[in-house]
Picture 1 (cartoon, rainbow, N blue to C red):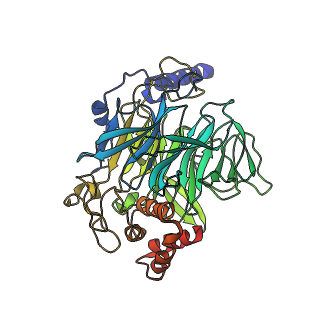
Picture 2 (picture 1 turned 90 degrees about the horizontal axis):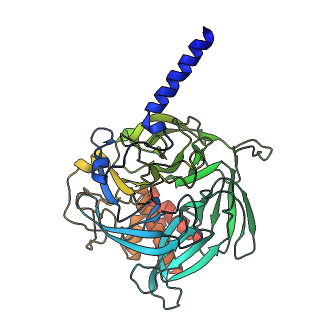
Picture 3 (picture 1 turned 30 degrees about the horizontal axis):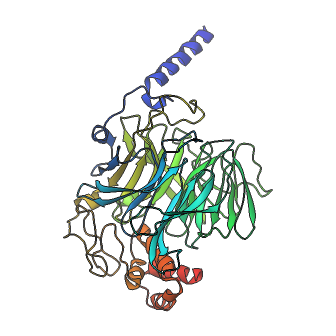
Length: 499
């Protein structure tokens, strides 16, 4: 009788699992159009979701990054999770000219014929041809190297491709690749090395690093040096810095969020620590899944107080965006599980990357697919979708309900592109600024270092270094001496440290 009871209980549990469309490795529902999917979003009261782009403008977006001109760059991979030896179809694309509903009116293909690109970092700096003109460039991953792509003629299409670092191992696992490129206050790019592959890579200076499966690292933008940052984690995918410069990662198959301490060792499959024990874990609860990817901090003042400074992560198996409140116990971050920020009734929703925009909204890359599992479902399963993908914009109520302003003015009062429905944004001095576009002058960029929006501050800081280099030093000293707020002071100090 006892055995029969246990059997019936287990059978009932299996029936419930089978009835849950979010528990199926291969979704049995049919895909929805983007407009149909938009109606399935469940958000906190007052929040809105806008469709930024969808197929055929993009397919299978993976990582995103903003540039200072108000454009959203992203990688897309139709090949994922199986690289091709023939003619790869993957690209780096750029969305721009966003209308009043957040929809991108223009899409530009910057680089083509890539093989499972994930990480990317766009920036503008003097041309490599020695002319001194500014050109747009992008650091991007495509099997087996990290590359530098450059647009030499100003049409936002890459004309030149140069290897920065590599080759990285991709033979043991096809999704444990280089991702989550984020530029730190020190000017280096931080990145994740995913599961199982064993890479030995050296910078141009000859210094070699070894990544046995999950690790994080940093490298200089010219490829001159690469350094280990942390050891362990199973499959990190997603990095974010908070306003204080703390670095956090999202990780699959271990604890979902870690605060990454330089040189720290973190749990992995059978990986040892360094004799000092593992570094602290920020969040140990699993949010009901090990499929965690993408992470950012909701630290823009336009977000309601209850969401402010929360860490959020994409959870692609249950099709949710999870939220955690961070408590600081001394120098240790401790996460507390909060209600999800986003859930849906469409099980094809796959939020693989999250970005806090320079407009204060949350931008979401949706890999929209019947299958997301890598080992749970065969890599060559024919039901994997290759043609769909969406990018969404989640707008908090304080931003959606605030009064609008005439199309935009930046801190220099020059005309700037903007999202027409984005309400007033002001800098530390009370000046109205554009939603997405940053100023182009040195004085304007230094003023942006005081912005209440972390993304704007970081974009401005990097543009000052990349475009003005050492000629900015005197102006930065003046900014330190007369800083409008701590944000401007610390970012100016970091820039002086870089120079």
